[in-house]
Amino acid sequence: MHKVLEGTRARYKDEIAASRKAVMTVEGKSLKTDMKAGEMTFDDFLEVADYAVIEDAYRRAGRAISPDLATTYSDFIAKADGDPDDLEGALIEAHVTVAALGLVPQVKESLEAEAEKLATQWLSKYRVQIKSLSDERQDVYRQIREMSANPMEVDIARPTSWMQPTVIREANGNETPLPRFERHLLCGDDGLFPEDFNTWEGEVVNAELKRAGTLGWYRNPSRASQDSLGIIYAEGEETKMVRPDFVFLGQLADGSVVADIVDPHGIQFGDAMPKLKGLSRYAETFGGQYRRIEAVAKIGDKFRVLDLTEPGTRAAVATATTIKALYESDAAADYLA
Image (cartoon, rainbow, N blue to C red; front, side, top):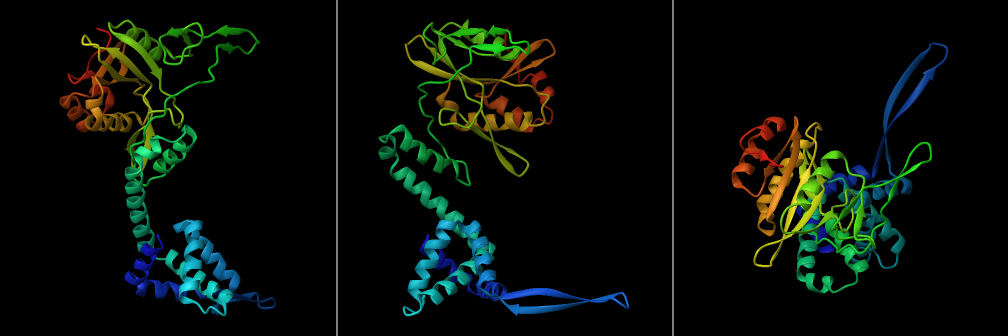
């Protein structure tokens, strides 16, 4: 990253020089009041920045290019360009330079692009070694991937245990046992998994468990965690994450095991369409790894489903303007037929 910053200093030297002057100059206004006449006058003034002003600008730059990089790069240029007999003065000069870099937008853009490229390169190069690490160490690298400016593929960690409630406590203190479902990947000693589903979710789980060949299922955590499948979608200018509700595992006639994503969601929410389009784009890229990727919604008294592994369905999703009309169209089918 030091080499990248050295390159940007050369590439944008004029812009950095202008920013350096801005760092070293304090602009302000003085106010004078004539109490007798009841008049006020304002005068602009310029002053040379003192150490406190320089350090404030340096800290702001650190937030733009990261505090660690600002610190190490300041040390680097102080030793490379400064007077070895006046390291304190050299470091102040270095802080001025870093502060100036933080004021040039192109510097941050170049730095982020190169950092992204380098991180992707290293994560790819050492992916086998990373997979050989403990779960705790792998999670560190997973977090690095998740900090990427552009979403990156992240392997899902194998869940080993969950804390799962077994009862609902009513306001009056009474406790009601939660419904229990068979064949979840993380069952209790009785082979059952307690869950407080809404009506839709419970009906979907029961329907999938009745399908021939269903081996088991996984309740995908709705929170950001290493054992949760997250799929990106765009809402306006923001990139967000949708986490499909269920992954079901089935066995084919030849004995092979397949995975199905089944995601029941209400259509009344404002983000329903962006989420559906994100799931559709995911299906276009990764659909070959699944048997089904289905979005389910209840329209009236019927459950309708969009099979997003089908190109025609994805094309309909891409051009749809209202989600209700999409589920009512020929692109969808009856889910519980």
